[in-house]
Image (tube, rainbow, N blue to C red; front, side, top):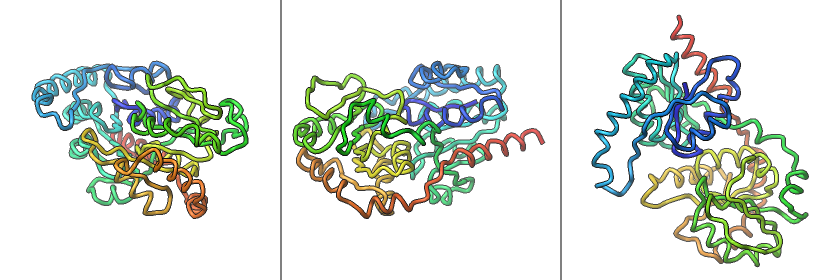
Length: 345
């Protein structure tokens, strides 16, 4: 049984693992009436629903009812787990993961969890006490935990080996460099506004493929600008991109670096964030694998200058070419298999 949701970053890595495990195990998913439910329906994965409880950062009064609602969520998850009787629960973090993990541990079902960020999120900090192992995307994260195991990040197979010429043709890009701009699953108003205020200037030199987030599209008729609210096939999107401007969620950052796409990361940093994207961006920047523009330093002119600097950065391109980034899928699957073997022996 898999769990994790609330955002695509907590679901898509699970789906990458499910696609490799289908046919070898009976798989199912437990989550809320959110993006995880829609994705599992699309993929034909058996889904079990409960009511999730999310902490609202920076808003004290919104969180007063969390204890009672959390108890209800855990009870719902216990009923589901008793009925399904899984041999293992695999968590991908986020608030959706905690109730199933708490229920599973109380019922004696082994729990594994995976953390994609450099530091553990709140849910995984709580789950870490209840699970056999915490699998991590970064070596230093695992070394700080008694039950930490470094595995890397699970990535989808369909992101790799795509045809660049066909992708550029699909998005109507010409022979100029193509810059992919994306602001996370729901888009970024700050990035969208800065980019759009300088589209005429940028599109004189580059193609711009902009994933702006659902409901964020605007009327635009600038030659070389292609706007999408959401992309079903990110493999095709990445294949089209010569460069990228992106938030620094762990999955998007790992995908871009694994694909060796020179990237400018603009990490999310506001009251709703715990600072994980800043940590991720600093980690990759210190290793010469990206450029970083802090949001408080961003302006329309500053964004254009940062994009020009990205494209001129030959050292970054060399560092990405030499970096041996490994998908974590196989190592994670080995840990799943070991946990199952321990259960049956």
